[in-house]
Length: 450
Image (cartoon, rainbow, N blue to C red; front, side, top):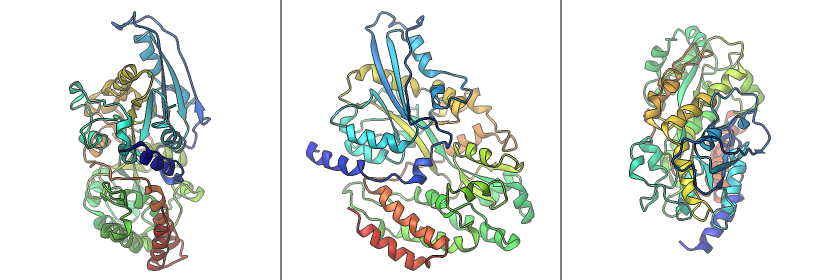
């Protein structure tokens, strides 16, 4: 791969608009200022490298990975992982630069990858990791036999390039379950306990929509929260979906699975959708006012629901997901190959992504670990959520995480193609266009990309 071609591709990717749906995917509406930093000095060491040469490491993340309370000043973080690392390594000072949104981090990452200027350790997000893999030779190889078995197989597969180099140390994942309102299921005469709802929804998307139609027929009410949320779940199971991983060509219009999913969702949305835009004010209000019965929910979505429906007492979580498994969210730590402190940066990335630290990050911020050993840590295994009627979130999402398949390829044009299709779904959902007419407009938009 020549640098001239890489530079051109990076320039294109840096200019791609970040879809609000994806940016919000792992983000909190209460995020603080876009960038904060913290440094700390050395304290008494338990490290054998106590007399090592002083080094300053820069760590760049986004959203709320759970490393340090600067991420959420109003939150009560139990653990300060940044300070803990510096305490154990008195020669190391960490400067923590944290962006409020992954979109800001993505633009910065692709603008500086190669030319230089990135942090010693850079976090990258699931939706742009496939594109990052095109430039894996610019990132340090983190392969180490001692790390074999640390992560979920899917987490390793998504960060391993064609030459077998591991270029990302997995942090969290976003395994999806189904959050639901038990009182609304009762109103429809359906099972309403978590096990019963899981049995009811166990199967493929056709079964999910069949149950939704039964719900609508019984109540006359919308079943799911938004077409945008359901589309996110469906498209993340199609691999490849929009682009060919080898050529980079857009294949969305030639991929029968994409059109089939679109047709299936638009057919169901007529009765089953709220016809509300995801992340709209009415959508947030719908969590409180009985506007819908179910929504797809990764761990980070639980805070969105509880924060929007404080007076609701019947939210619960079913340990199930259409087609078995789905992931929305998650990240890796990468080390730029041309960084000033590559070896020390690898040590930090290694330590932060060990099961013990990821369990602490989960306790801090609810970021669900990608390390199966962490699922046995009491901080994770015993976790429950009082708002969701004491649902055993630690074990539910452990099951969901182990059902997740590798993420589909999402290349340079993913956000543009996805925007064209979600816009088409919105036009159908709000009654502006019929499904076929709206799809034809999406075809025009997609053909004009590039």
